[in-house]
Image (cartoon, rainbow, N blue to C red):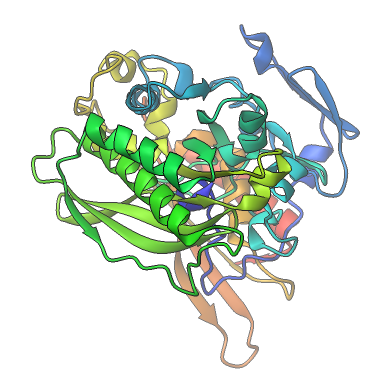
Length: 446
């Protein structure tokens, strides 16, 4: 949920609303993969996608790719020595009385992913350019909030949900189409006395030793829901903030002078809402988003007389900071030089092993009259090059003064994390990229 868990598509001088036909490449071919894990099997045909034993019909919305589907079985958050799993375990240990859900299928309905969270139909987060659709009704979850109602249906009044989530995105050292989130959910009777008593209980248990910057105020831009008693909201907010501040203090136990800042935010499924940042090595780092749960979600679960809070956070972001991991691709490495550096329950700094040299290639082209979408372009490059591509960045944006035609030049940085790549190998990949970009995105190569 929330910004780290739910992120609106970024905008730039490039349009994000268009869609080039890159997936017709996949639709023409039958794909299957097998591994030692049955859950890794998937099949793509022109008619359907088969994954986790489910047969899902394809339609005009289908844009899942073999590259992404091959990651579904990995579940890095459940691999004990992976830093992502270590962070998850540390967060879970901070909420010992919370029920945990960490093995829910990432194949969800659009109702679960959007409608149940009251995300508007025209919200940009629903776009094909931001999500992986099996069809118009089924997606790879974009956030763990897709399972909030599952958690509420369990009967537990406090729970944590963690898992792999999927979003089409740019390519650089901190973005990957698969990442991991954890969110917490807590509720109790919408009764001032009961909320106050539980707040007193957790405050006596632990007082986080942090320097707090919090001048947030309830205001029209970040309001109390009209169905809520303002006094109850003040108390449940204090409950939330104490819980979050304690968790952050424990995660950053080695930071002697920890400074935490709360700022106002907006999310469709909480109000009021906040983002939480920490001052880490001189810079403010966004850690999570949180807020008082939209009462419509509570009512939908038959909990009309309850009030709750929720938070959500990305695990990669925290792991990269706490373990000093410079490239998000490393989390997916099966190289023993990476895996054997880490121990469950312990945070230690990553020691880099050999960094192989990059191979840099540029591609430039004239855009068609139709809208251009950078996410689609990056997805195409990743689909061809896989994890050998380190980053893709726009280095030139030119409009011809006479013809008004627009030209873009992208720099693609190829680098393997565990071996040297040859220029000949990269030339072959680059030629495939050029061919498919020209064919599927209808551009004119320069």
